[in-house]
Image 1 (cartoon, rainbow, N blue to C red):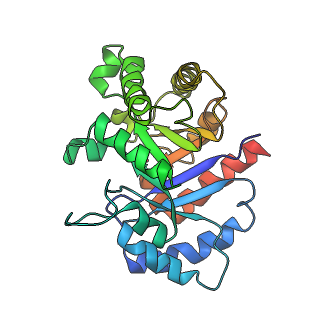
Image 2 (tube, helix red, strand yellow):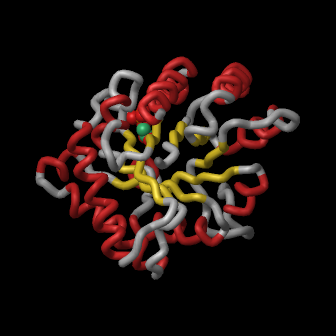
Length: 258
Ligand code: PGA
């Protein structure tokens, strides 16, 4: 059975005080769980080295993620962070193409696919976010939207193995931060569509490929969601900032998997 992967996306939240309170108990809690599930926290990137420092002499039972990357490795790109810098501060997973970046930073399928390509080249694990708006859902365009977002990655990566060692986070945009998560059976249908579409296009089985769901995941809805066959984990925003909520979610997922 696949090890579920649970990623906390802190977005533009957190500070040293929260980090000091959050990570030691989280790490202790994960002593019991880290073998059965992969847990990643993506804080604002300037805190990655601080977290790394806290755990410089004890074993870290979670991975550090980033919320974005630049395409370049160095040079005159003010304000950017490169994949090699992420590696330097022990980042393993990188979220790309989040709907908030598409909305507020003009990112699109092409720039997201280029980032996907560069991350794979650097052996970082991309978590690429895809999903529809409420209007697209009402217009029955969910599959079409996801298909276009996936196709651009195939186009730019040009390889049947593009999706090996990667994660797609299916995140209906209307469900993000709204307190209204998508219906688990509908998420299963879409996750299954995504998996089959990628396998068909790649004309082979994809190795180490995960599909997450994201959008208002809480301890109350996670059990039904993780029971779906094609959901391998979650991208969690709000609830990942609350230690109690987040650990409850991890516990429930692990009960379902054991
Ligand atoms: P949410 O965010 O869990 O707060 O809905 C999910 C995300 O944006 O990745």
